[in-house]
Length: 217
Image 1 (cartoon, rainbow, N blue to C red):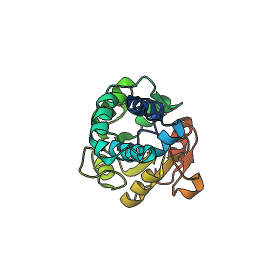
Image 2: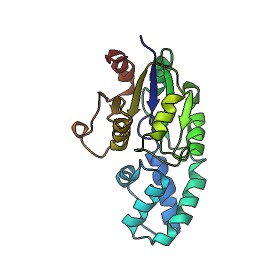
Image 3: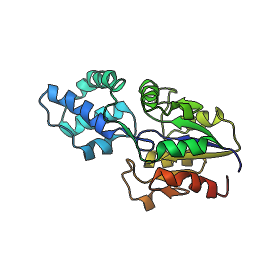
């Protein structure tokens, strides 16, 4: 088997953090007696970083733009240490263990790097990754491909694969000109057949075989 460099998105791909994010957002809204977000609304806002999440939340609840900064700061402060409702998707740890035996693994996420490291530590999966890149690691974020390319450059291997759950991840892979595998159980907003990919999986137990069957690896 040829050694590959496999980089993963985090939220919606390896971890389900939407209930956590919903809880933090709703606690902030409750302080001003504003109606809470539903879980579906929360999921639809995830993917472009906290600044965009807060802006979308404000737009939905008619919160004025001058609240953007203080809401973002309050959200970030809580987000860095709140993990009670964040879970690994089923099969993630076993899948990472199997892949780590043959390939080099990394993370490329729009989640801020501090909370990213904190949640990886909390869920005991940081050991699987040789490099971790977050939304504030570079001046740009996904779908700009710079962060993904930087993650690949940190790894040792012949072939490149990006694994994610969303349209943003698919676009990032396209711009980086690398194969993209789509986890169908995450935070995508479009039907699977409308997201460009080189393979899909519904459960993480399927991922090692899917990667093994790819002609490029």
